[in-house]
Image (tube, rainbow, N blue to C red; front, side, top):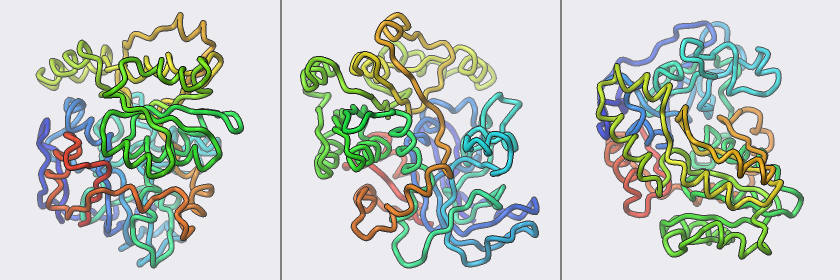
Length: 393
């Protein structure tokens, strides 16, 4: 089959690799019909190379059609249309019983000290072959796959794999009071959906980005925006809009690659030039992030407010302004999305013909799988108005 494989910094290729096969009784094989390029994939493209191996198959936002199931699978059959959550969880361990599916004890990558295994995401998370491919082996298929109806296009459902549950959790974790206010930093796919979900739930949303096309997309969905490229002091602008207090909550949908952190950017760049045997332990034990977005979130939230971090961070020794956070009484919540926990709330919205979350207005580019390297470069450079890119094998 064809698959998108990693070969180094900014070097992804589409290659012929062996077809996946059933290895465990509770496996399934799906034929992938659509799969997204995620902002997290750009961390592999740019920063997290020391945890990759040449030839690793990328991607964690797939959907498709069941081709084969293992003998232990009784509730899926060939021909079922399914979305595959990006994290792999069993559904029956202690953590899954708490609906903390991203911490599944069955698939935790204990040798790395990390949570549930993820598709296509480095040895830190199990080095499981990913979904930017023609076919995908799905472990723990007795629980993971999400059946969706036939008929509507893939774009109606594919974001259930990651974007929608991640965004829903970010809003839930932000604990916005009824008819309260929230600032969303970053208007990539996750930020766009965080803003739309919060507005759908009746909150005032102020979104911050510096890319014209992303701001325009948010405006189309009734989101109040601040253009960071035109404002000298974003937190001050937010306070000006909120009686000097700041918003009740803030969602950081940017993460480790925020602009405005030159020293951390240099540290990331230099680490990326080191041999993997040196760089991997350095990043694991002394990594540093570009914290501009998180620092602005701390300045923008009102006293006693909540910050929900959904952008991915990877540092181990990041300096945090603990005095300011303590003085303001800030609550901080974060983590990988517990995908299956939020599907019951999201499914009625994605099957609603009115499309209340605008899932049909998120994809900006649809490319054949062969064009994945073009898609990665376009997304990384935010070129040609790229907000969300779907690959179609």
